[in-house]
Every structure is written in structure tokens, then in C-alpha cells.
Amino acid sequence: MARQEDGSYVISTYREITAVLNDPHLSADVRHLSRPMPAAEEGVTPAFIKMDPPEHDRLRRLAMRHFGPPHTPGLVTGMESDLITTVGGLIDGVADKERIDVVDDVALPFPVTVMCRLLGVPREDEPRFHRWVNDIMNSIDYDPRSDPKEKLDKGVQARKDLRQRLGELVAQRHGRPGDGLLGRLANDDGPDGRMTDADVVATAKLLLIAGHETTVNLITNGMLTLLRHPQVLQRLREDPDLVVPLVEELLRYEPPVHIIPWRVAYSDITVGGTVVPKGSQIMLMLASGSRDPQRFRDPDRFDPDRCDNQHLGFGSGIHLCFGAPLARRETQIALTELVRRLDSPGLVADPPPYRRSPVLRGPIHLDIEQGRG
Image (cartoon, rainbow, N blue to C red; front, side):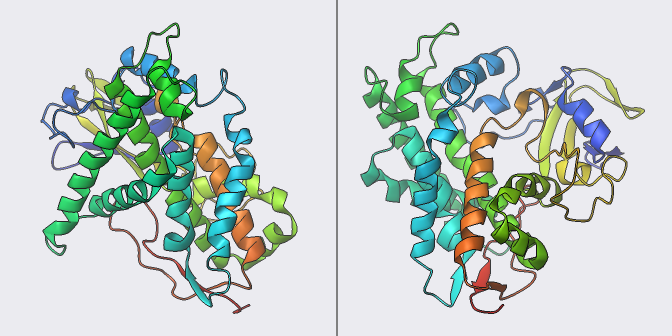
């Protein structure tokens, strides 16, 4: 625990991070901060990950009724063949090239395509959704000192356009519950009531943007790590079942999200012997916690055979990433297919160029040459 000059607190150890993530006295709602923080989109309904109980719990239950266990336990496994076909088609498109970019050619388009199909976005809309998500992702790294303002403006406009189109699709789905996740959410009258259209749009945006960020970085970090550990890459090629523990170790060793930038204390609390005043911002260093030597033996070693690997790659507590099962399976399939189908891949540059974001960890490009083995 360390207090910063601006009055915020940084937590970097595994035990303290998990304690905070499971503490009911901590809020995910930035409105509880003692110093105001501007909203990302003024007047827009936030996703439930930025809410607290009981409303967070109600909206999460409504989303999970159609996204995973216990009500729809076969959702991800039922997408298996489509996932393999989608990533296989992307790899086929670059298989004959001597040089490919894992990010642009595979990791970026794959999760957006999958999520559009899951939501029930019309095929003719998919190119627009790809463009909007990419513009939003690019704007996250905006630096006013070096980037043209157009980069930020395109991100702002993409958020508006995406929200507007999702709203139109949700309105069209009323009375048509079979049309993908949008239709099921828009028509569900379960025990928790029904989501408003604004909440359905916010949940769909969460899946598209947050799910995209996580999966793109996880696939890219995974391929980079495998190329840096050629003996593990060869093991995966020979034993595809290794991919399950391997992805768990990736989530610990090279996670896609490094920081949860805020939790807010409802009242004065004590963390690791330090009193944190009410309204203080708390930043959780997930990547540091997952390499805490007090929790993980030899934490800086990539070991897909690691036991007791309860990492923080998807967070913890009531805000545990609810898209984690899909992100895991997308990454498992993408890495298995890349390793199986690429011809002796090798890194063009190490390290590759990284995104500037301190929160999201991943290369902005990952160039690979085939036939270098």
C-alpha cells in the first residue's frame, strides 16, 4: 500500500488486492470519489461494472441469464465450431505471407466478429462495428502532446455511432427474443424484471469494448510469450490440451489488464495497516499481485505446469469479469490454431511496439515472419 501525492492509494500485493476486491465497503462507482472525476460519456447510462449492489447484482444476473451458467451453461461450448471457423478463416487469409501482424490480421478482427454474431448484429453491419471498435481502441491511447486531435475525435464519434446503432437494433428486437443476445436481453421478463433499452445497450457495449480489449491483448501477449519460449510453443504444437493451463498461466504472467484504476472507499477503512479515508481513490495493480512472491513461487517464470494458479487476470469478487469464459476459449482456440498452422514463426522485433496505456497491456503490432525456425 502506498499513498500518492494526489491522495490516491496504490495496492500491489496479492492478499491486499483480493481483500479490497471482496470488501463490501469499497465502491466501483466513481461518483463516491471525494474529488470529482469527469464521466467518460456525459449523460450515458453506465455499464453495471461501474455500479454497486443492489443494482449491479440485478443487472449482472439479468445479463448472466443469457450469457453463461446456470441458465445458459452451453453458450460458449455451443460456439466452438464457429470460433474455430472464424479464426481459421483469418489465418487462411495470411497463411501464404512471409510476414504477418498477429494484431491486425488475427487478434483484432477475431473477437469483434465473434461478439457481433453472439449479439445478433446483422452481417452487413459487421464492417461498421469493426471500424467503430478499432477507433475506440485507438483513442484510449490518445496523447495530446503527440497525437493529432483527430484520433480522439474519431473515438468520441465511434462511441456515439456504436451506441446509436445498438439502440436501433435493441428497439427492433422487441417481440423477437430469438435474435441473438440483444433480442434475449430486450425481451427477458425474469424474476429480476427487464433491462431497460439503455441498460441493454450499455451491456452490449461492455461486451464489445471491454471484451475486445481483454481478448486482443491476451491473444497477442500469448503469441509473444510463446515465441519467447520456443520449447513451450513446441509442446503446445505436439499437445494441444496444454493450452488450457497455458492460458491460465498467461493470465497470471502477462495479463491483458494490468490495473483496476479505481475503487472508492465508502467509509474509512484499513488496508494492510494503513487507514484509507472515505472517498479516496484506490488503484489495484493486478499484474503486480499476480507476480507477488508471497503468493506465487518463482513468479517471474512462465510455467504452464504451475499448480494452484489463482491469478488476478480477470479480477476477483462481485466484479469478476463475466465474459471470462468466452475470452478464455477464444484465446485457447486462437493460440492453438496459430501454433499449428503457422510455418516456423519468428519475431521480427523484440520487444514489439506497445500501447501507451498503463491499464491495458499489449503490443500495438506483433510482426512475425514465417519460415524462420
